[in-house]
Length: 241
Ligand SMILES: Nc1nc2c(ncn2[C@@H]2O[C@H](COP(=O)(O)OP(=O)(O)OP(=O)(O)O)[C@@H](O)[C@H]2O)c(=O)[nH]1
Ligand SMILES: [Mg+2]
Image 1 (tube, helix red, strand yellow):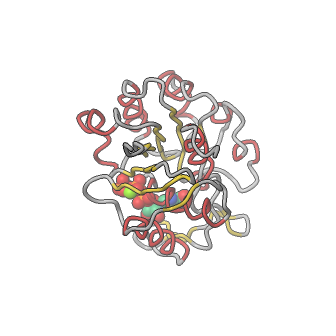
Image 2 (cartoon, rainbow, N blue to C red):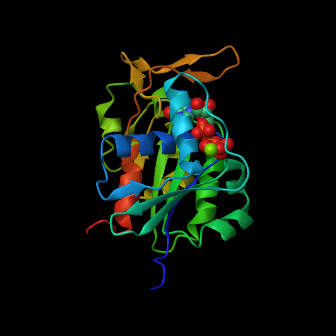
């Protein structure tokens, strides 16, 4: 019997926006809370990288940056279909030849952009560059590190009704009002999510500024990190058995 082809969900976004942390937090939540009952992790060293990243974050330590070739994290549905989530070192996503290399073979793409980033235009241009490879594949866009601009009780933002990003006036909103940004984001419809790996602790962003300008995690409580991944998994049409 021919082997079932692996379905691939690709994370795509610039350096340091928080892709690996998001994946580590999302996978941790998905399995701890059994949010995708038909999904199993496969064993292997790579899963250890995610566990290690999550552990570091919960212990208040900065995570390690992704290096080298894209990392593949393998999962399996109950009916034994292999699913891979691929994480990429962000620097590679600005190179059009990398988009040609990695995106055509994927089944779903999750773009990650840091909310309020000073290089937002560059990050959005990377999304535009990748669009040509998407065809009718599932794609979504998630904003990372949102606790830095949003408040704990910004329900209208955290619950992400369609177009939530258009109406906010939280820091970072101006850059999203440009026609180019609106054009890029509009294409994702309801699949635009605010996320935060850190979240809040006692109503305040769950980080402590370090003397080197890093925001060290402190009692983190992630928000919405699992939502985009669950949507991407469901878009593959798996798991009904
Ligand atoms: N404030 C804040 N910082 C975050 C959050 N998520 C990640 N970070 C920080 O952002 C930095 C980069 O996170 P990574 O997950 O390594 O970023 P990446 O996109 O995988 O980066 P590359 O692997 O270099 O492409 C780390 O110092 C994290 O601690 C978040 O939700 N809030
Ligand atoms: Mg990374």
